[in-house]
Structures are given as C-alpha cells and as structure tokens.
Amino acid sequence: MTRRVTLAAAAYPLDPLPDFAAYAAKIYTWVADAAGQGADLLVFPEYGALELAHLGGPAVAADLEAALHEVARHLPQADALHAELAMRFGVHILAASAPVFAGGARPVNRARLFGPQGLIGHQDKVMMTRFEREDWDVVAGAGLTLFDTALGRIGVVICYDSEFPLLSRALAEAGADILLVPSCTDSVAGFTRVRVGAMARALENQCVVVQAPTVGLCDWCPAVDENRGRAAIYGPPDHGWPETGILAEGAIDAPGWVLAALDLSLVAKTRASGGVLPHLHWPEQIAPAAQVKTTREKPKMA
Image (cartoon, rainbow, N blue to C red; front, top):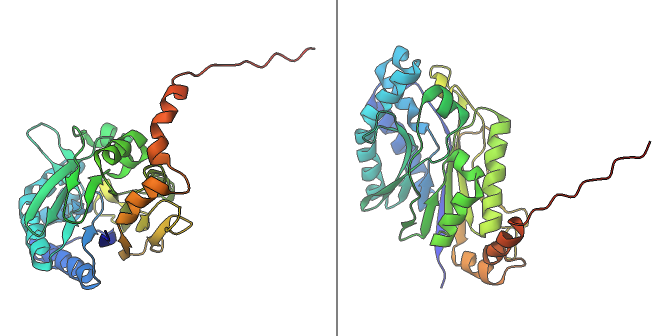
C-alpha cells in the first residue's frame, strides 16, 4: 500500500523579536510556506525557541539562566500557536525544542509534536552535551516515545541523541519508520557529528531521518550565539533510494525549508528485501560483540 508523505526540514535562524506578536507572525510565515509547498510534516530545530528569550529584553536574553526561564514562561502561548497552525493548515509540526521546568528544579530540553487535532505528545532530550551538563544545567529527560500518527510512526532523537545508536534502535524496534533530528550546533564539526549520526541511523535502521538545524549568528543570546548546519532528509542508500542516502539537502547555513516527498511503504520493503538487511541482522552482532579478546604483538627483538 502506498503511503505518500512530504517531509520538511527547517534551517532556522533566530531573530531578536520585539514581542510575541512578531514571533507568532514569523512562525505563521514559516508554517504557511512549508504547507504551501505541500509539506505534511514540518520539523523545526533544537533550541529554536530560544528566540523567545529576547521578549524579556536584551539583558534577559544575554543571561544563561534568565533566558531559560523567559522561554519557559512563553511556552504555553507558543504551544497554543503551534496547535492552531497545525489545525489550520492540516499538518503535523515538531515545534522547536525549548527548556521546560517539568516539576523539577532544572529544565529539560523538550520537543513537542502537534497534529491537526492538537498536541500529540513530547520528547525530552536524553543525552546532554557538555555545555548542557557543565554550564547550563539543563537535565536529561527519561525514556523515549514512539508517536503513532496518521503519517507514520515517528521517533525523535534530539541533536546529540542521534549520535547514540541504541536510542534510535529502540525506536526502530518499536516500529518507527521516521526519525526526527532537531539540532543546534555552533560549528561545522558539531554539525557534521550530528549529520554523520543521522545518516548512520538511517542506514542501520533502514528508515527516514530528518535533520533540522538552527543557522546563523545570534550574538544577543550566548547559549545559541553561533549556529552552523544544513537542513537535510536522509534514507538508507539502497534499492529505490538515492545512492548517497540523501533525499534532499540545503546549502550550508542557508535559512529555509528543505522538502522531500516519498512513499513510506519503501521503508518496510527495504527492511524486508534490501540489498543489505542491517535492521533484520542487528541482533547478530550482540554475541560477537560480547566476546572481545586481546592479542598482543610480540616485542621486536633487539
């Protein structure tokens, strides 16, 4: 059965917005643009919601701790906006992740998924970077969520999470055929790590992976002051897919949407009869991986 879906990945710049109305107008423009190009699922980046920090003024945006609280303060209103836009345009939206104080003293980094009927659920980042651990004290969430939607079964691995294979594998084994990777990286090296991770997850799980980064300078907010990356959509380099595994990608640091239309039934077909079968053969690595032995080279005779 054909399961056509059009995916859209945002390369998203952060702007020093003067008020919530300006933020709402910006998000409306972005959603309308992607929906107008036929997108069914829109993916915004990690920490894209940090531009809400500027609503508290330049001093708040420039303070690491104050920025967290300012963004969290505006998040209910931002979520209502995304829910309304998902309904109005008949699309699914992964909103840009944001700090959320979910009953604890410290915030998690949370991405929220909306559909035409409203909020579907959320995913908290589970692997924290050194900056999040050592400087910002943004804490890890607990567990993973598989979103079973009208478009397909979706998992979210936020930025650094994508560099850890077991997280994506757990989602794939639960049934995910699409993995979303919202990202925020301040160097080409950081972007490349996430890109390589995303492409590897598409290869080994034989699924679709969508990477959506922040891009551009944001010198008014030190938490996200430099942003490098390119939006892209990846698949396994196998029969019926692009031989590079790249379904679509934008230019480096170029703001805008990158879209790819595909038949998601190809995921199941590739997992069953691809040129290679890493999704099926995954368990076969467990036994040999548990039996590592060391063989030492003999010292060279004098």
